[in-house]
Image (cartoon, rainbow, N blue to C red; front, side, top):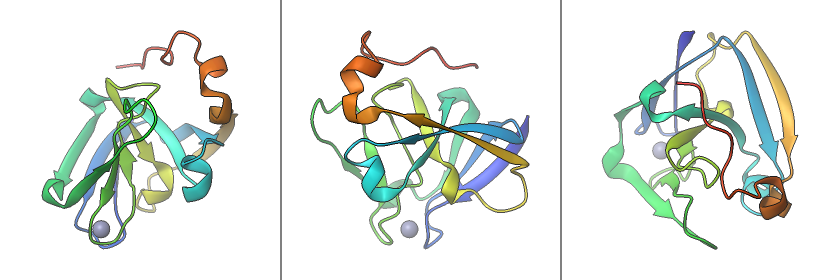
Length: 129
Ligand SMILES: [Zn+2]
């Protein structure tokens, strides 16, 4: 496990996330992820720390309202959010991590366009703490 750091474009929102150096991430084709090119790293809340910028975060919600899409109100970048599949954790946008700590990326496609068939139980698998 290493500590990755990242944040939004303007630098107001900054976070730390503890995860392996080699990351397993997902590329989702749902209506919002496909438009933003978001690459997901799902982590439990215990492995995520918002360092700064809480006051600049704006929440966007749609459909079931379970996911809380958090973006920087200054630069518009969504560097992390509360995902519908894991509302008890966070999804970090691996594209927003600082350079230097990621050794390798393994990308898996997630068919979020057909969310209900991918997650018939209404949520994803429990996250490793
Ligand atoms: Zn920003």
